Structure formats: C-alpha cells, structure tokens
Image 1 (cartoon, rainbow, N blue to C red):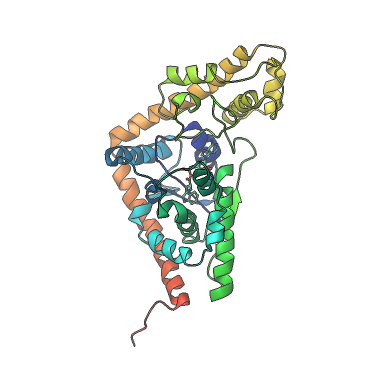
Image 2: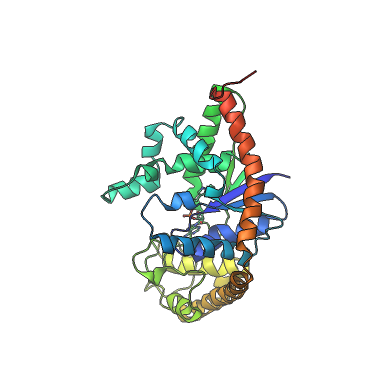
Length: 330
Ligand code: TYM
C-alpha cells in the first residue's frame, strides 16, 4: 500500500478552504492508502499565538479531523510535537537548503514584500521543517491545496539532493492536488485565497461557524455586474468560486450546476451553494460535538504518536548514520 502524508496548521479555526482543498481528500484516500495526518503545531508558532487560543485550536483541529470522517483506526493522527524527530530532521534539512531557495518561497516573499516587520527565523526556515515532516515517513504522495505545491516541490529537490550526497535515503514524494477545489477563494475578495488569517471574517467560512452566519457569508459573497451564470474564471471570479464550492460539496460537475441555474439570478445559485455548505457544516458540527464530549482525543493522539514515532525514529536514525553524526561504540 502506498503511503500518503499531510498536515494542517491550525493557527486559527479550520476553514472551508482547508476542508475542500485538503481534509475531505484525506478522508477519501484513507481506504486506499496508508494515511498519516498530523497537526502541524510547530508550524503554528512562526508567529505569536495566544497560548490558550492555540491549545483550543489544536484540540478543535483533532476533533474536526475525526468529525470530517478520518478514522483513527485507519489513519495515523498525531500532534507534530509528540514526535521529536520532526524538529531534529527539520534542522538537518535546513542545513541542506540554500538561502536562495527559501527566498523564492511565495509565502515568505509575499510577507516580506508587504513589509511585515519582525518576521521570525522560524517563518523563513518553515519549508525545511515541512520537508522533514514529509520525508520522515517515506511518503509517496502529499495531498494538499494548490498553495502548498511549491513547498512539496522544494521537498522533492531536498530529497534528491540528500540522496545524491549521501546515497539513497528518502522517497521522493509527489504533491497530489485535486482537480476541483484546490484553491477556494475569499467570498469578500475573490482575488485572494480563502484564509484563516483574513482581516475581516466575511470572506472566510469556518467549519465551526454558526450555520446562519455561514449562510449569510455565502449570500453576500462578492460577485460581478455581468449577471450571467457561466464559467468565466477571469471575469467572474466570485461566481466561479461559488460554483466550485457547490461542485466540490455536492459532487456535481461545475458545468452541470451552470446548466441548472443558467438564465436565473445569482441569488438562486447562492441559495444552492449555501444549502450545500450548511448541510455539510451541520453534519460535521454534530459529530464534532459528540467527539468533544466523548473525550477520545487524548487516546487518538497517543496512539497516533506511537505509530508515527516508530516510523519517524527509524528514518532519523538512518539519516544520522548516513551523515556521520553517530559514533559507533564497539
Ligand atoms: P495550511 O494549514 O495553510 O492548510 C492546510 C491545507 O489546506 C489547504 N488549503 C486550501 N485549499 C484550498 N483552498 C483554500 N483556500 C485553502 N486554504 C488552505 C492547504 O493547501 C493545505 O493542504 N504548510 C502547511 C501545513 C504542513 C504540511 C506539512 C502539509 C506542514 N507540514 C507536510 C503537508 C505536508 C500549511 O500551512 O497548510
């Protein structure tokens, strides 16, 4: 069975973008692949997080993984800091990464171009840690949204570089990006990705949003004044995004949705998308509440960490041997 690995960084509440672009795909793949999914808590602290809030977001993220359909018996679910090998291999990967490569990473570039002050060294070397996250597990595939593709490509380069220097060590992973929903846009500004770090909450739907609030966000999503329901991503990005969300959640093709709503007003289409979103959120939230009450999270995480450590520790040992970091006592 091929292995798949991915993670989410809960710097805030998980979003509909996380769900459509990543989480629901983990669920789809868990029967056919050996699935390893972790909570990237080390990645959260590249910027200051309120400790109480961070703890709550981490717990919610685990509960939401399960609520969205990940089965802890099939998938290995764990917290990044519970497997120490991540931080250690992260440092080793940083020693095999060139500054030029990190300077080219879009996330870092965007932030520095915006003139953000006090950017941390952790933010800069983040892609090295992400490479370690993946390479520790010999993952064949990494299911992610489009924004993470560049990071997985760097991971491939680093794996190949290491293999060339030290001999075959790492499996070179491939990013797996869904055809529909790999980049869900903000509802209030469809030129930007839907993201938990958005300043106003209007453009972002959170999986734990109150259903009425979620419906309102969809119904007041920014569209255009063209007034025709069709697939024109360039001139009608807001409309396209809504149709994509509807398609991802109902499994119907985008063309099929356009056919149904052709010639009608945007309001009708928005109502359809809002129903699809609210049905999905209602189901997720019901299970989320049960999981929080059942107090199974600790057990899931300790079981997951044991399984993950067994794989990761072996890889790290091998890496250290290859580099010459170990002294062998006779
Ligand atoms: P993060 O937490 O930003 O996002 C988690 C996953 O959700 C996807 N995603 C989206 N997909 C579609 N539309 C959107 N608007 C949207 N927003 C987010 C992301 O592409 C991602 O797949 N660096 C990673 C976490 C990470 C990781 C890893 C992932 C750390 N180590 C190793 C894979 C493998 C991140 O910040 O994702």
